[in-house]
Length: 149
Image (tube, rainbow, N blue to C red; front, top):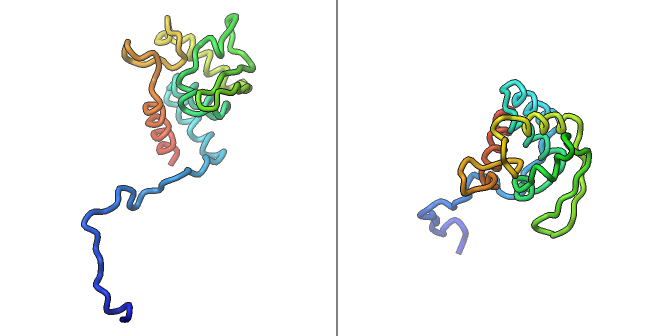
């Protein structure tokens, strides 16, 4: 029987990932990182700029990034130059440096009126949630990446 005589099979429903890029995404290029930073600065998005700068500089997973507390990065009236946190996935300590631009953005965010009285660095909007969720962070990141185009 030749292949030309076989009946054509048409799936009744498309796969959930049809046409979507799945798997690991390509990293942002330095020009894209700077484009996002400039857009956030021009928009006056203090929290988003601090969050983006810390995410890029620390290379932490999203779940560890959103759980950071003010005490992890801020002491004696200034943002620390280096800090160490315990990763939730590997349970290992990670030490990273906080760059000058990130320190300035974090200082602006910590002194912002929306941050008064909060223990977590990225507080949630609702009282029963101490910090933003990883899903909220992913949505913010998606919006930032879209804005660079």
